[in-house]
Length: 259
Picture 1 (cartoon, one colour):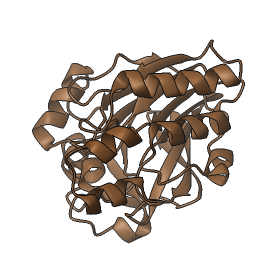
Picture 2 (cartoon, one colour):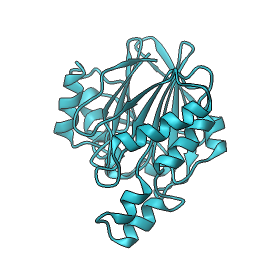
Picture 3 (cartoon, rainbow, N blue to C red):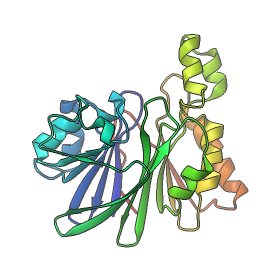
C-alpha cells in the first residue's frame, strides 16, 4: 500500500491510497479541475479510481467527490446522512459508510478494510479513517476538535499517520480572523492546535508507526517549523525519534509513501 497526500489545508484536502491494483481517494475537497490535475500528476488517468471516501460534508473535504467519481466511474462512500449531499449526488454510485465500524471494499482483486471513528467536529458526522491492506495500516485523521483517547484506540497501530496540526495558539490569537471564527477553531468541535496534535500523536504512536504527515496546517495561523517542533517533542518523549515527519502542503502533492 502507498499513500500520497495530494492537497491539505482549508482550500481543499485529498489523499490518494494505492492498495495493490486498487485506488482509493480519501476526501475530494479541491475543485474538479484542480483535483484532476493533481491526480494526473500522480499518474492516474480516467477510470483509475475505484472508491472515494468522504470524511464529512464541509466542502474543503467533499467538494468534488461526485464529479471525480463520475469521471472515474468510482463509488462514493459517505455517512448515511450525506447520501443526498450536493457534493456527492453526481456520483454513479453512492454507498453508506459506517460511522464507527468497519467495511470491506473490493476492487481489481484487492480487498481494503476501512474502519471509521466519529470525531468531535462542527460538521456532524465527521470521521477519521483507517485503511488496512495486506497487514499494513494507513490512518487519515483531521478536523478533530480536541484530543480523544477513544478515537486513538479505534485508529491505533498505523504504519503511516496523516494527523492534523492546524494552528499555533499565539498566531491564532494575534491573527486577522474575527473572534467568532477564532472561537470556532479553538473550540472542542473545531481543529487541533500544534500542542493538541502532539498530544494526539502521543496516543497514536504505536510500535509500527514509521511516518507521520502533519496535515491541515492553517495558512494564516501556523508555520511548518512550529508544527514540526511540537511533533518532534512528542516523539522524543516517547523515544521515537526514528519516526519520519513530513508536512503536507496545499499547493503541491507530497511524494508517495510506502505504508
